[in-house]
Image (cartoon, rainbow, N blue to C red):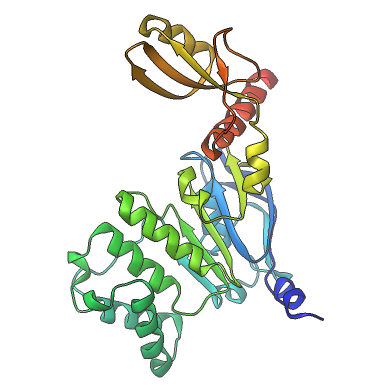
Amino acid sequence: MSRSTLTVRLLQLQVENVSKRYKGSDFFALSNFSLDLGHGVLGLLGPNGAGKSTLMRIIATITRPTHGTVYWNGIDITQQPDKIRSVLGYLPQDFGVYPNLNADEFLHYMAAIKGVEPKAARKRIEDLLEFVNLLEARKRPLGDYSGGMKQRIGIAQALLNDPKVLIVDEPTVGLDTEGRIRFRHLLSELAGERVVILSTHIVSDVETTANDIAIINNGQLISRSSPEKLLQTVEGKIWDWVISSSELPVVKQNHLIRSIIRHREGLHLRVIAEKSPAQEAQQVSAPTLEEAYLYCISTQRTREVRAG
């Protein structure tokens, strides 16, 4: 058996027909959701409220599913959660720090919680602080850190136990452009022989990091493909259209508009449509991943409306 075959076999995360209904409600945050993952970066895309965080919490064994189960290398983690907890790194959306601790103190504390031996923890923390570029700030109180620095210390704590499964939930919300780019590069370096799940509603976060994209909406998986195949879904469906300002209200009611740029001659619209929205509209030859994402979400909503 080759090493690559062995690696894939030992890194298998399966979500099977998972549903989640919260107590006191008839609303399903997830509905018969299934997803098989191996090593690499999966970009989990969906609008706010789509069910992404619920799925992440179920995989991280923080929340139990109402129905269905999750398997890690064939083991049901809803019944044996410690099997994945020992190899899991998790950066939740609402990750918080102890403001009076410095980076060294915080990471040693987290290492103790995760059961990392003190000697191994010292070396690991040194390596991680260098990796996330926080060596020079290691003695500063975390309360003085910027949003980007807190996210980087968050990824460091998630990596303390050298996890085989790494989950990061909406990691760039609140970061400036520079911080977002730095974080994306950081995630790209972590792919290797890990299952990495990047959950976000920001398409550009997955564009440069994910080799696999799953789109979720209303608790359901609506698309799973490579970025290249996802882009193919909108080929021939993006249009450049110039209209007057007075036409905009009617156009908004009848078409999916990706962007609006105001020029002297009128409003330049980038419209997503199966066919030309107007005789003067020009087809765009290079669609973007965000347009493919919006098209998938819009198509699902249209199907739901027609189904009643």
